Structures are given as structure tokens and as C-alpha cells.
Length: 134
Image 1 (cartoon, helix red, strand yellow):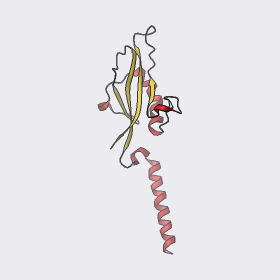
Image 2: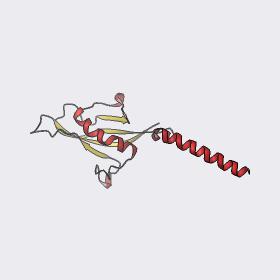
Image 3: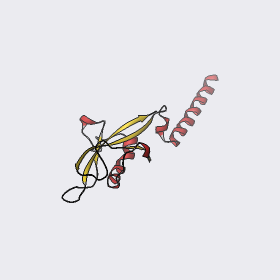
Image 4: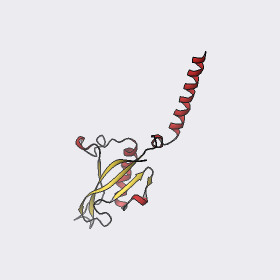
């Protein structure tokens, strides 16, 4: 009789734990490690009035961590936001066509500014990776 009661208790505890995990953002239940995205300016073709090489944008979905972010360009943000949620929760840049199999730890994105001769700006290539913060 004790084994049956113990099994019911374990099942009940498992169900409660499952409900708690399902109802929260799962990343906050990862042993105290928070998974975020670091998006770094990797290359600039032409002249960008906002970004410089090495500038970083840190995203902890759904927030942009402003105090850890160097600059934000609205032209680039429109492209970046299409991918940030999926990459933060299901890292799959190869499947999305954002990198090669040899560089699966990074995703590459670019802003929508075509640069000269079409605009006075330039195209920025961003290199994205997952980072952990405890």
C-alpha cells in the first residue's frame, strides 16, 4: 500500500512541476542560467550613421538590455526582431539559413539599408550568438 501512495505522490508532484514549468518562461527554470542573445556588428559595407564595428545589442526576450547595448538602429531593428525570439528559444540558425554548418554557433543578419548608390548609409552585417548569464 505504501508503494502505491508514494507513486501517486510522485505523479502529483511531477504534474505540479510540469504545470509550473509550462506556465513560466522556460528559460528562467534553467538552473539559474539565463539564455540571452548577443548581436554584434560584424561588418559594415559603406558608412553606417549609427553603428560601429563591435557594437553590441543584448536581448533578453522580450527586452533589449539597454544598459548593455551600445546602439540601436531602427532600420536594423526591423530585421533583427524577426529572428530574435525564435533564436533565443530554439537555436536553429542553420535551419533558418542564417549560417553555414561550419559556423553553427552564430547567426548572421543584415540591416535593410542597401547603401550607395541607393542611399547615403551602408549595410551592417550582424553576428548573433547565445550567451548565458547567471
